[in-house]
Structures are given as C-alpha cells and as structure tokens.
Image (cartoon, rainbow, N blue to C red):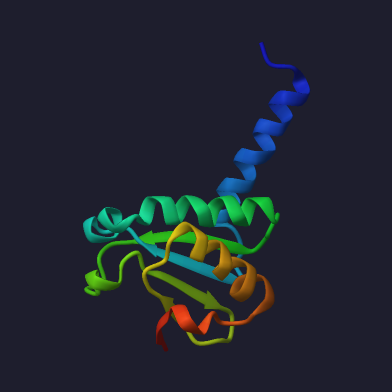
Length: 120
C-alpha cells in the first residue's frame, strides 16, 4: 500500500508529464517517430528528452511526435521551435546529444551548431 505522500508524488509526476505534452508552450520539441526514426533509436532519444525536461522542472515546453519526414539517413531527428525564432532541426540525436540540446538550446537559447541539419 502506498502512503498519501507517495501517491501525491506519483500524481505530481504524472501531471508534469501531461503538461509536457499539452500545456501552454514557449518551446515545442518534435521527435521523428516514424519506423526509420524508431529503428535509429528515437524511442531512447524521446525518453532522454522527457527525463531531462522533468529533471530540470522546465515549464511551457511541449514535446510531441511526428512520423517520417523523409530524411531517414539523419534519424533520429528532433525539431526545436522556440517562440519567435526559426525552427531548428537536429539530426542523429542520441540520448546524450538530446540532453545537450535541452541544456544549450532549450534552457539557454544557444543552438548546438554541430548537430543542426536545417534552420527554417
């Protein structure tokens, strides 16, 4: 049996994870989850993104998924879209690189240039 405090912590974590997918956004992160992305490791990349955002208690960051965008050789692909800034597309994003993108681009607003495959 769980204590009331344990249940409260579980509820808070669940609400935080829901907010990452639905809330008001300043930053949107889109992870390519087509079969090519999944085969290249996108599930682990997505998990690392979610963990890093949760660990940093970032608010107003929404994480979504998309299917294949036709650049299979660059998978896993992650788009970062900050309000009022061009969309940045990162390629070959491992979990470690995903954490770097969160720390540098999402938190500090600095694009990780060596990982960028497109800026629009």
